[in-house]
Length: 200
Length: 319
Image (cartoon, rainbow over all chains, first blue to last red):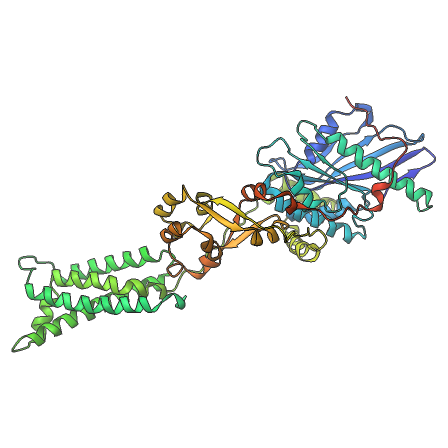
């Protein structure tokens, strides 16, 4: 869960990129890593197979602008998308503050998107969280490819609650920061709400 | 399987047997094999080879037992046909000598004739031959075998803290996956708009490419190039919310244009496993044909956190 350190005026949040295998979670993180100032980010830690598949998770600490005088730090994680690494996905979701669900827009990946989204709900539930209480946004990635489904259809499949969504081409960076900014705003907004209610 | 042996199959078996016996008897009378001398073991070997090939050609997934059984049945029927022909020939003579007539009926030409008709008799019976159990596909996992996983797993053992689970985790993952689908499908199930009427058209060539190879003939492929298959939205719409449109081969047959359907291997000649096999139709050809109403979302019900706003936007210093 998010932590607020009043002594050093620092807020720390955990954002997890979730989605099916090869949908572009790591690509999102790599783009962010390459396009943020050195002093605002830490080293990106990535444990991948020779085939560039995430084996454990990727991690990127990131610092955003100061909000109300508080330094805001975000720890960005990705999960391994392959079905067999569910224990790792569960582990990465522990203490999550916000989720970016990355969908692969290609038709042949629709089923995997749906199963991954259901898997996200299951794994959140195993920690006692739910999408009702955990902010999430949806990123429809790979919009530059030819064989892609319409956003309408993907919304129909994944985003029935009609939460914020973004079209993206993570390789080129399109939509990457929009998605990240949106989830960070939602996480901080929820934190602010809770704080006002005296819950934090 | 046994349902596929129809009355027509039984009728054709009887007709072929009767015709074979009569024709062999007639051919035996002609003494056409005069001058051609082939020893009996060679003839037997040739017969067994032909029958063995026929059994395998007709039923490629036959088990070894089934194959041997098939050859046995072939040989038996051929011998019975020859014996019948010999007996019929003997009955025609004033002083019947069965040994002589049997020898006549066992010569090259009548024997070949009997073998041919044995093939015709056995063709409808081929479906009774036991099949090989289906081969299991190897589900090798290249990641599990990759050097990175091996080294990481070794590190995990030593460290005791790093969670990289190879074999065990893969089982857990697949179990979790099935549980996920069954227990949480209601959470994200999209509504089905049943008021939409219409049809979806798919190029027949695409559908044929998805069907099991052994039921698609060259003629069907040739016809499929110009034909379209029409499927009602009634059966498509309930499936799109699951991001797949799947039908059994038997279901698809009902929608295949008659000309192409005729050219396919018929259901009676196909096995049940094939007919019940599921075919996933390409979403990229179906979804663009659906009207926008098909993807109508329920009234927005965003969670409470969507309305939570921060007074200052989050900005990451970008390069």
